Image (cartoon, rainbow over the protein chains, first blue to last red):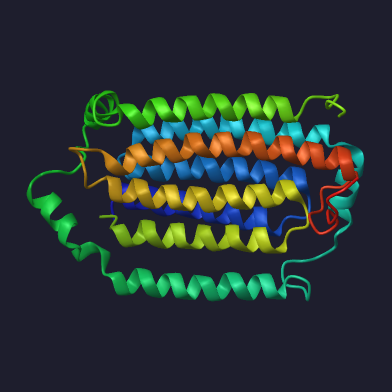
Length: 183
Length: 101
């Protein structure tokens, strides 16, 4: 058991544990902050999958952008929303949550079955990639090919997504204006 | 050595936790968090498979695009939640059940 494995299990434990706390917690603010921990754990898992750039993007966009947005929306929605959020006294496995719990558990069984049946480590293209040395190198030079690919092969999706992001942000700003236009 | 299976199992469990949150919670913001968890599980899959594609970086590129799209989705969804709260004075999706004022 080497260091990478220990780190992987640690990150997986942090991610799944904090995700479960998000699911169980009664307190909305606490679940939002545990979601923060989940995102950091996921960034660690991305690093272990040799995708450092995606991990940094995850931290910058999710933690810096989305989480702050969620906190702002929560604070703007006022005291009444907080009161109604805390009124629900459902524990993790109560009668109210039983259908949701059953659905999630059965789905988990089905998906795990699929994962184990698929026999992922013996996939044809994965073996071919390992044979032709088409694996992301461990020395951190994988980011070079990300930069080259982003400016050549994926240039059109890159531009399209930037325009889409601008449209979405303008639309969000328009939707959340204080005085809506009365028609 | 960490295999692909380990990443898949983590992402499957994460996906199911997200599904549980979406179905069981009575608060639009928490449901949004559940959707984000499911998206992150999918992105973890993309990144784990993207390790075996250094020439085109397909998996990592798609993960980047998915993260940016998630940011756009969240911004719009939170704006909608704010409007719903202003209109109905609640963000419980079960109680938002009429289209007209």
